[in-house]
Image 1 (cartoon, helix red, strand yellow):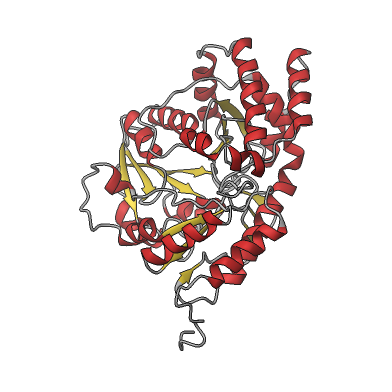
Image 2: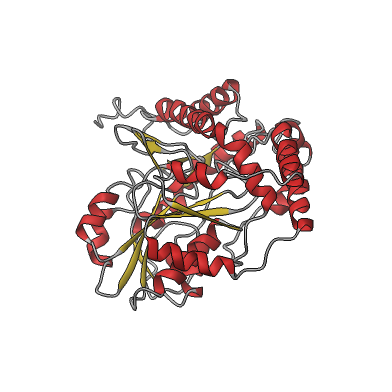
Length: 404
C-alpha cells in the first residue's frame, strides 16, 4: 500500500483556524457564522443543529404542523438516511427516478409521483451538481413545499446564485467529508416567518451543549485535520476506514450545534469560495479528459452552472471495468468510493417492485466516485486521468465508434 494515499472525501482544516476557534470559544467572542451563512443562502433565517440529517428531520416535523399531507418525494438514488428521517417523522417516502445525464432527480417524471397528499419535494444537489428546474417545480406545484438539500453542494452555484437560494427552505451539512466541515453539524435556511418561528421554538427547548462537549469537538477536529493529510491517511488507513459510515443511519439524533463548531464555521467561511473553485476545477479537468471515452459516462453540467463537486461521479459500462479502475487507483494511492450500493427501494420496503426506477438501479450498479477536494495536487489529478485512460477498458472514442 502506498505511503501517501488521497482520501476520496476530504476537507482542508488548517491548524491556525482550529486554534483561533478555540480562543474565540474560551474568550466568548461574538459569533457571526449565522449572519455569514444567511447572506450566502439568500438572506434567510438560519438555524444550526448537530447534523444535516437532523436539520432535514426537524424541517419535516415543522412542516407537519402546517399541513396534514403525508408524502415526501425523494429521488430514488440518494442517502438511505433521508428515507429513515421521513419514516421517523411519521411520513411516507415516495420515489422519483433519476436522470442518467446529471444523476439528479428527473423532474420530467415528477408528475407520476406528485399526488394530492404530497407534502414536499426534496431537491437534492447530488455530488454537488445542482438539481435542474427547481423554479419550474415551484411554479407547477405551488401548494407543495420544495426542500433544497445542499448537504453535498456547499459552494455550488449558477451564475451568482448559490445552492440554497433556489427554494424557501434549504439545509446544509458540515459533516466530515463535506465541502465545508466543522466536524459534524448542519444548518437550516428558511425564508417563511411561520416556519422559522416553529423551528426556533423547537430548538430553544433542546438541551444546551456543555463546555465539555465543545472541547471534545476541538480535539476531534484536530484529529480530523491530521487524518486527512495524505501521508497520515496512508499510514493509518487500516484504522481510519473502520470509522467510515457504510450503512444508512437507523436513528436520527437531534441536538444543538456546539459553540466550538460555530466558531470554527466562522473562521473557515472566508475560504468557501476558494474551496468551491478548487473542487470545481478538479472535477472539470477529469470530466473533460474522460468525456469522449465510449465506455464511460460523465455528468452533463448545464451552461452557467459551477458545481463544487463533493466528489466526481463517473459511470462505467460494466462492473469489471469499474472494479479494474477501482483497484488500479487504489494501488496508486487514490481512494475511490461506490457511494450508495443500492437505490432506496432496494434498501427499504417502500411498496415498490425491485425493477422500478431503472435509472437509479443502473446508477447504483455502475457508479464510481473520485476525489475533487483541495488536498489534491495537480499531479494527483493527472494521475487519476492517466491511470483511467491507460487501463484496458476497450476504450474506443465515441467519434471513432460512429456515435455523435
